[in-house]
Length: 452
Ligand code: AMP
Image (cartoon, rainbow, N blue to C red; front, top):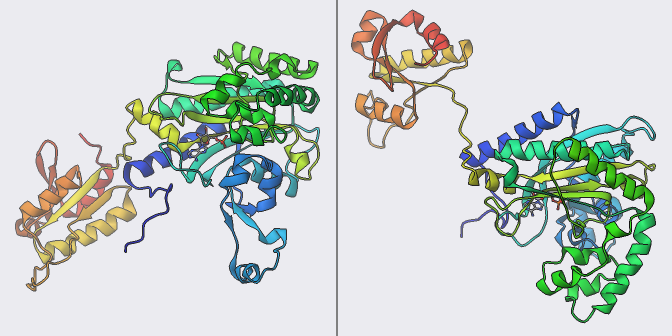
């Protein structure tokens, strides 16, 4: 039986790999342009970080984490020992909790100081049911602005996320939607929560099992439910935006006015609550139908003014977002984007004898150290049973065929006549124009070749 890659993961090569590399490049340039600093945190963290950060009632913590136990701890666990929390590890399902932990541990942000801006790019892991746009290992690029509750920062971050999506997907404004909401703070949420629990209790019979199980724990999550009956019931539910405290109301109003100022269009969506417990005030999501199946959220984020405190740090307000590579790629492809290879012109040496192959090897070694050009020759191993001296020398026709296949721009032909005259024949593979170049000038020729 051959071993396959785990379900919901991907091998990246060819155009897919180029798309992933472009995702990294595009995120780096967009975020660095806005003053964000690239950071990298471990791919696994202590399980407790996610349980405390994301909340026990969240789907991610409840049923989607991949946890890991290292070496000798497996034997201890089998023997029934309870492992200390530092030995219980989980592959990161998202990036924010790790960054918050790193901020606390390395004292990266001063309380009441100027906010700091960080971004990350990398793989995340969730044990979800795989489908189009939903993977078990997927890639996110995300940004976090830490240290202030200033609404201008919310609007600027949303505009930056929009720029990133538009750049990567080649989108026009009509290709996506920005959904925006405020879910308030602990002050307005507690009285709103009571109202919502009451509403959900009244509709208990009709709500699905999972909404029922979360009425007390996290009643907001019923807004996220995909069940049609729950959706239509929740349309009648009290809306948080009608119950915001004065401060949250003002904050939300200012975020909207800054977005208006920047001409960023949005849809107020009071059913948008986001799946993780740590969000406060502003929440947003970019969605698109371009190339998407039911997983149409390209990017999501919001404020998390209490997360750092919850994890043992000081009270430091912050906000962030993450965009998923797999869905952005589907969207980009639906707009006709191709992730073409970097056009490095390829020179291919057609060597017609063993003697010519020696010269070819020398050209390749020198070209590599004297220019950025790519130079190849026919490296195919000798066919079995062929033991002649010229075992690796295939016919000119066969070598030209290979040059075509590799999309070489220039062929450099070395035969007996050329060796005798100390020249090589250079042939443009598109126009078939030929010219002779002196052997001792060929490296210079390759280095200066501009293409025609
Ligand atoms: P979240 O961390 O759940 O707020 O998701 C942020 C973004 O990450 C989403 O909008 C998706 O683009 C992407 N994403 C989340 N989960 C997955 C997944 N299982 N597979 C692929 N992309 C995902």
